[in-house]
Length: 347
Image 1: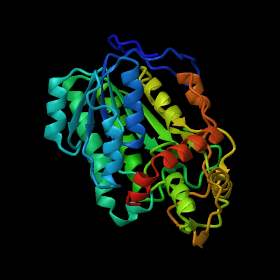
Image 2: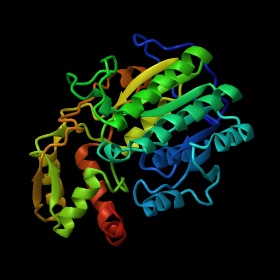
Image 3: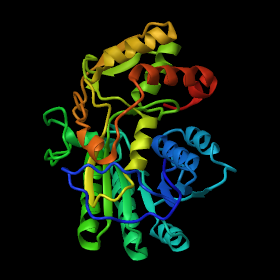
Image 4: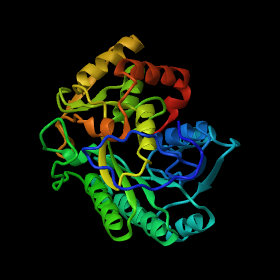
């Protein structure tokens, strides 16, 4: 899908134009490569014959054994170099750029999760903002032109649905969302001043096999199987636009094409699914009933999310292909096949 030859930059593609030619890639940098999304991006790139320099610091944001499991898929594989390091280190970032010439940088390293960002906001800004600044500055100094950077649907809190990219996302409800907004703004500044070509991707509730253990899909499956009460913040009617990780990874790579500066939603694009409906689907697959412990709705959470994905379709030729039914099948199957490992993870 992505031809391994030198990437060429082109003029900005406007919203009104349709240009769905896939990007042409030879060698790329993926940060956060042992993470949930970035590991699938790395896998898809390697399958397409693209050479990948993959960085991850294997931090303790969640149980590192899961990151090690994902990274083990790439060990010894042709076309990938794994580097253990932190993009918060400008010295490391500069060394990596000095030793390589990248067609595109996929900056997917991030501290994620809304609620924990209220506990330790500093680490969110050091990774999501300072780390992103180090990447941007290295791209400027080494004349690397294309950046794909991960952002979040959390920026749309309180705005009318379905969420469109041109909505004013100026009132983030959590330090996590604020840090992502800051990274978006920094990327625009470097686009404006230094002609970097930037694709900002706002991801919507990504799920799938081997997801982060702090995410609802992983936790709910495990808690239902164990008989542990599910901590439900709210009454379960809150809904999300669930998007399978393989679809997200595919859209992320498609966004490596030249676009100038664009913010693009990657989401399911259909009527969002409530937590209650999600749990019912897990109960059917596990053959067990959930025990639900309702708690007050969290002020930093969003009630519902729903992506308008027309721009992704227009500019990237992208739309999700994995249905929620199929995706839940995969998530539950992975859990059952790896039950002992999954139940041993800290959540």
